[in-house]
Length: 533
Image (tube, rainbow, N blue to C red; front, side, top):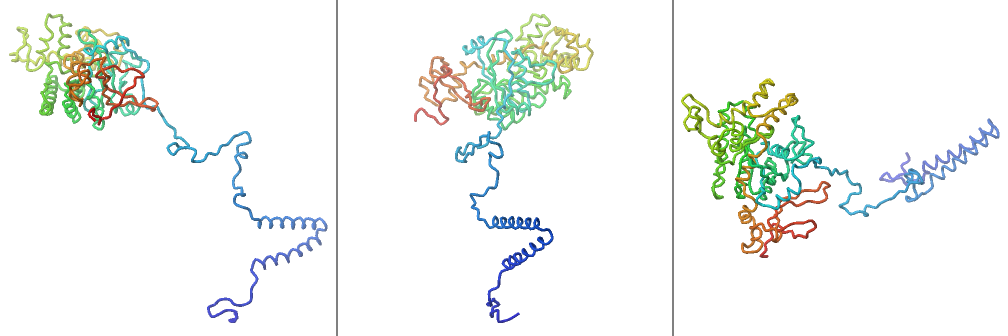
């Protein structure tokens, strides 16, 4: 290496040196004539022509490589016409052509979230139902409240099946329809999520019809707001309690809510058959279990009523307790059972007097055919055990485990005769058919509502005083207090129900005065509205 070609820092300062690309190009140009001469010598004129063509192609390729093409003129992808054809119209939409809240590609939306029964009709006409609705004294507004899985929805099923022509109802099936669980997720999870109202025409023991607006509320603690909204519209609370589980957390909460809203409470002890089939308690122990449940309920009512006013007593003798098994399709009160007993045995007794002797420490003395508080000398069970529980236990034990002839003889004692096809059913459908035939409809439950739940007109004063914050001397207050149909329209809205297509909501409320019609213009007032402002 010559040191004169570099400076003291190692930089080259000698003459210019040709680049490697130029030297390679000169080498290629020098080789081309040699290749042409060799081709001409070996192949003649044809080879020379081919060599000239190769030279032309090479020259064109070199020109294409050196050609400068602008970015907008380059073609990376085929056009839409080349891909789809000339007969297809393609549109290119800019992102600003649609608002931000509207997606360019909308997601698949399933608007069907409810299920319904279309082929159902009531035993009464719509005109008869409207006639009952126009008479407030024949209307009862109640809410079914209670703990989770205590049978509120199944109890509603029993009432619906007794008042409707249901082609979807299969008496031979063990599956419950759960008519008030109208959402798909409610049917899948077997749990109520929303409070659902239904208007049912129920008959009492005197065959008098009443329009009962019943709200089936969820029992889960996370949906207690649905129970609150239902109680705000109701005139009374029907407390559903499982006979086996007794008082639970949400049962106590339902009692507090009802007392805070100043509502009377009636109790339905549901799933009484669990004491027979699951716990297998003797009739005497089953009586003590039911009695203990009522005592606990009264204790909670007393504790919640200490700051809310008068204390209500839950007592079967008062007629505000109903015993039921919704899965088996039966229910009764002491009064309705006394009427059933008098009808079966043809005795000349007053039903109310007999019912007053079917609870508590009352014993039947067969010698003198009287009821006394002291047990007989030879021993005996309390009247509720002897006259109510033992026949009920007998029906269950005979239907579940005995032969057909034994079942026929037992049902004949209650004046019930079933067809031969009925005895071929499974145990649960047969038990449901037998019990519903013995105890009949829910007339005892209707008697309890009529006797202990006030009508909208009777409860209007207490209800309006509790929820209305306006002046007491105004025309609006007087119209709501008297339930005047010609007064100013006043509706208390507590819930919103979505349409099946999820487009709008329907407001659900209670009309205190006036009449509401389709297409009527109304004014919606918020929670913070005050007439003084």
